[in-house]
Image (cartoon, rainbow, N blue to C red; front, side, top):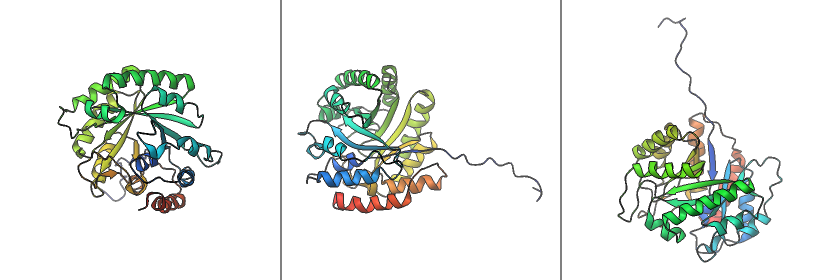
Length: 300
């Protein structure tokens, strides 16, 4: 090519990414009680970082998750009037009763519902069958529409499970189709026990994203600290622009056979997407402060 000939190579396209910070997922498995005032202080700080959404608490039976029984008290202590906070709150529910409770709080904009591709895990996680869970989703969608809220459905055990149940990639498409017909518009694929390969992650999003344009797809990935990048990159390059994480990688699924498998560290996600030129609105100083406070919250 001559020196004065213009270079018409295509420029990289900067894409906006939604980051969902998940202190709820990081907290729920910790047996020692985390003081409510410390949780509140932590979440108030996270509200200033610039995340799209905070998965901050849950409205489920206190017997099931005692750590999050104080979610209403945490809400009361949140400073949502901060002009610089553009972050939405998401609370997990497991049935209609929990949804009704969550909807009592105007501050909660998203309800999250865990739906599993594993019948065994659905029963263990929510004490409901898959068919009963679909009925729950239908009722919760009606409530969300009535209250002008949004429902996020998590497809847990989305890439296989430890129970020996039949699994094939087409299950993702089959259940996505059913949820699409119900009216679900945000669907997060969860590698619950951290067994998905980057190839499986890429194939899932490459198939589903163009096939269901009305659905916003997300990735809730679990991985070993040295194996997160390949999965995240696979999802991103396949068209996923919504990612869950937890600062310092705390939390994860207790059913994972490898104890090192946990949430993808949010700070790693931020660095990765910056390297890709993705559009983020993260306050670096607040993020660093939140990482420090996370050590106090989780006793790391």
